[in-house]
Image 1 (cartoon, rainbow, N blue to C red):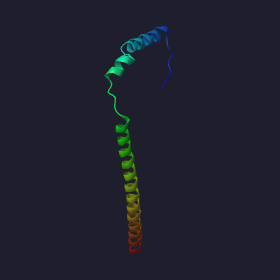
Image 2: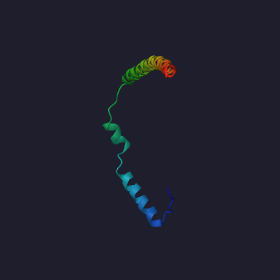
Image 3: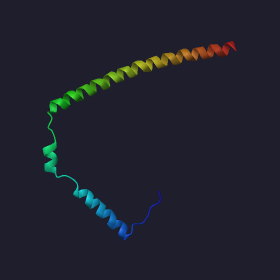
Length: 86
């Protein structure tokens, strides 16, 4: 991507656009009133479920890796058998 120099007018335009976006932002107090508080225990339960699921996926991955190695060994033996018969 080619770098381009910023002229005074382009820079002023960028600054006014950013100012207008900042003006539309809500204050922290208004945002705090609109947010709903949730107990930490709810997040802890959710986190525990995610961790358990990750462990289960790891076990599944190990099981599938063993299955893949078995299939690859069988395939290699079959390939050798085919080559011998040719």
